[in-house]
Image (cartoon, rainbow, N blue to C red; front, side, top):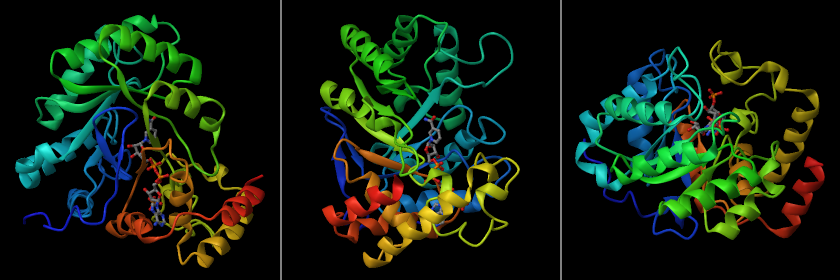
Length: 327
Ligand code: NDP
């Protein structure tokens, strides 16, 4: 089936830092629910619906699954079977940093690992190049120059169009930006976690990004699904927290957090939003956030997320009330 002709009518696109690239305000990540253990048909329906809604940016990494690598295979299959003529309308990313294969070259930041991992990702995706290739985490034992030179080579050899970093703290980020700039491959984007329950980026990282003209694509804006109404009455069977391979631990769902979510949910209703929508609008209130990378287990969750584009921006009154609840 062809993608919808009106797919660009509602989505809004933000410039990624000071680059030429626009990213949709809402991006789709394939960390959970697109692995070999998941239903292919559901993954395919989510990707196609996202694309129909103007989501052009799909975020992957070598290890997404389970098993590791299978999310890239799933996405590669969807691309080749359904979207092959739309490659130039899509931003597809991958990363290397976490454990991917056994032995001393299967994780972290050596040139050996980063470049081989990129080659493996391209094979699984069935692509000649990804749009953005990231160093997924800083490596305390590899010189930063080595990791950044690997990213630079990946870009210069045409395997990626842009370079990015993820999970680097403000100081490491500044050093990485300086090295990449000196190599002639400026860093396009940083990918940090950010949500109402996880605000570390406010302590310096967003300032460093702004100063360097680097964009931000922030992950887990719903704190893996906790910042929704789904856990208010217990842990539903089909939720991430209930799944053996889900990364959301039940120990992260405390009474204190649930009380906050109940209070936030009231503000959401005043804005005719769902709790999940308020959480996304709140992250995007900061203009230094280029895009929120959401995860989804169902098509309706992607529709909920894109629904925020019809809501007004948060008022100062609501921002202040949210601040008081989160304290
Ligand atoms: P979110 O915080 O958006 O959590 C997504 C999960 O929340 C969904 O899978 C679903 O879980 C639940 N959810 C979503 N919408 C709703 C809704 N409307 N109502 C109820 N529940 C909802 O993001 P993720 O943690 O999934 O991360 C998003 C992406 O970020 C990843 O796919 C990946 O691309 C990237 N990422 C990057 C990392 C990095 O180190 N760079 C690390 C982690 C993520 P369910 O229905 O199963 O309960």
